[in-house]
Length: 261
Ligand SMILES: NC(=O)C1=CN([C@@H]2O[C@H](COP(=O)(O)OP(=O)(O)OC[C@H]3O[C@@H](n4cnc5c(N)ncnc54)[C@H](O)[C@@H]3O)[C@@H](O)[C@H]2O)C=CC1
Ligand SMILES: CC/C=C\C[C@H](O)/C=C/C=C\C=C\C=C\C(=O)[C@@H](O)C/C=C\CCC(=O)O
Image: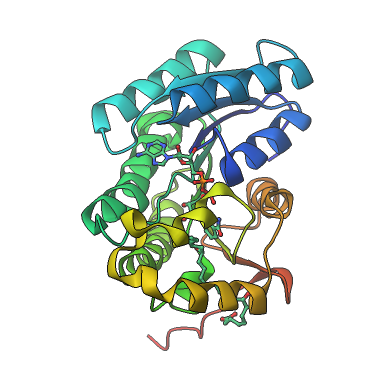
């Protein structure tokens, strides 16, 4: 899929990885809807992106992705503003082992909601023209994080759901490719949460262990995650792909043993 003129919706688009993906899309002449809970950061981000890429290419929609109605409104507002929808990045995520139910709601349940809403607006089964969905998991799904058991579970879940949906999309001829992104540690505000008892709960006592792991594996720039995301969007051969991005191997793909059924 070429990006020029395409319309993308990015959840968690106000900062971090989501903002880097939005910037990369705008650099390639796509239109972007930033969907984010944080009104101030989102409006500030839009102002900066408007200055860099010109007005009319980016909108900010304040939305809590856990609120299905509000998320549906965000999809509809995006289509109303730009006339169509081609790309959905289900990126919004939190790291909270204290309020772990919230973590499941944001990191997994809302990715499922976002995927189903994306299909309602892009799939040929709904009379639309097709598109691409990228769901954001983590390397925590390959090197599970004892300090983040529920976060880890959500990221495992995103991979399983996305791979299953990719097969469903192919078998059902949805015209939609669905891929999953698994970054290692990335230099975003999310990393600050490991220091907070409000986020880590009883696991906060392991913050030095966590920091050692970050030192060992390194911390990636958000721009590299954006580069990988654009590859998942533009490479028409990729459906059900599990992209890993690490300091040691850069952008690469996880391969699974073929099922002997
Ligand atoms: N930073 C890292 O080391 C890694 C992050 N990831 C994943 O990448 C995704 C983005 O993370 P970062 O950019 O690092 O985090 P971040 O905290 O810098 O940005 C996340 C954005 O999502 C928004 N958000 C949070 N809850 C929301 C909700 N309920 N509704 C709407 N927006 C909401 C926040 O306001 C924020 O703007 C997450 O899914 C995270 O799990 C994956 C691997 C590594
Ligand atoms: C507060 C930040 C919260 C979450 C950040 C992120 O989502 C969690 C990451 C957890 C683990 C990261 C592991 C990184 C591993 C690597 O960088 C690899 O180079 C290690 C080598 C092999 C991994 C096994 C494999 O590739 O299958």
